[in-house]
Length: 95
Image (tube, rainbow, N blue to C red; front, top):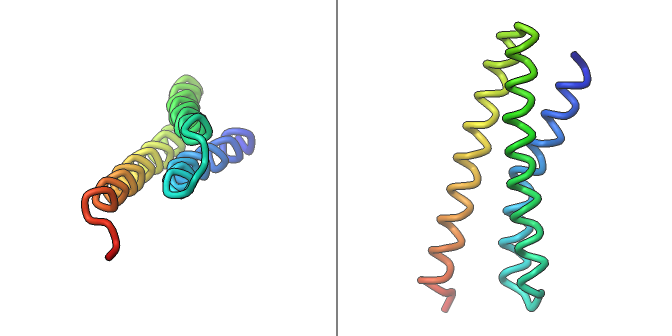
């Protein structure tokens, strides 16, 4: 049970942190490949979260499924807002 919590927390941090890092890198003079790698690793973290849900369902740990599902929703909403902020920054640059 501790393994699933550690993996989940790690995946949650990556899911929120990597798109944020990609947005910061995109604002500077960093290669686009580095930004794409950050976004791809964030996508892998999302798939790992889905894997932990399947693992918890197979073991019948429904409270873990609920907690992980809430975390996935929070990650998705956070990623969506970060993406919107990046789009707004492109359309409305600082004066």
